[in-house]
Image (cartoon, rainbow, N blue to C red; front, side):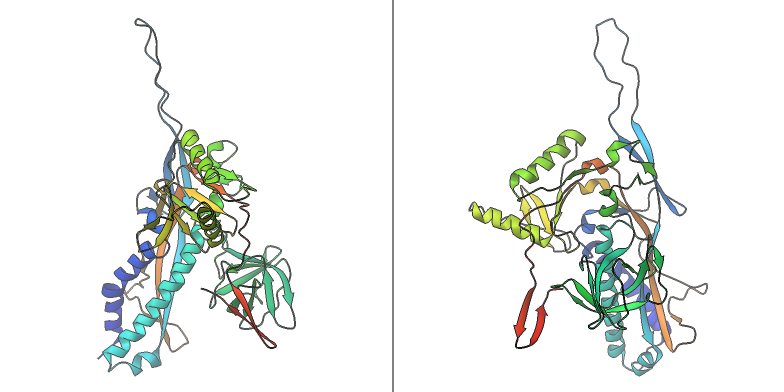
Length: 407
């Protein structure tokens, strides 16, 4: 007979390892290239010594001259607070009792919940890798009162089922927050909520309860913020990575110029290129125009990518349409207090009843943050032209318009 105790045991011994592996390797191809460690975690913070420049104790001189003066390595300390990452599943008491005498049915019930958790966590973790830590999903540009369609600057970070918070002029609107996204129209860059909540131009949409609590992603590293990891960029200019704007048409020369700059200026070797699907298509068209073969690389987790001179070039849904990142992933580390764990009560139980409701829930947790110890060893190319073609098509049948979209 299936009981809550047997369900607890399954979550701890069977599902935890599988889920952790899926989220650590298969959540996103970039994440699969980043090492994860518990080193340099002190209390609730990551404190990491980052070297820069070279050892200065070198020189040349006459046979009888004094030896060069010692000048050791240069270090600064990066400080970043561990971010709290959660994933929650919920089971109703009725569903548990209905499958109590059917182990197969209960396994299917748990499998469905865990697959949903993995999918949601993978989407959000992949999104955070390219975010700036603020949790901002989109900024509202218009609201259609008749259809309840919310038009925004981008829908890349939105997906059906997501629960959102709404901020107006930097202040959380309690009445609008908590709405759940019903449908995302990726053709017209609009979305609809289940409750049809009214939003205004300029409203900012965030993941529920996540504003300014997400990991330090590429968006923060490549931003023009005054500080990074507790240090002022003005005091340490090498905290600012290479950035080329208004790049124009994609070409090998454009890509190689960024790679050469990183190699010559910071001694960094690019081993991973991330771009939007639009940029990838533009690059494939460029290769086709010159009758060049397209090489395929297979990454950890089974991801396939085209390559540039042996460097995997991966299209990621969370990269802006006109943008390409050239990264040395050896300089990135996900520092964590521990790997994914179930949140346990004082009695050691992970499945607990939701007070006042006939449901039970279990919460997966991880405390971590992403640190790049060599920001000037990374590059970003934006303003790549020829990438505005929308891959989503609109089908018009009579008076009805529907959108054909990919996930």
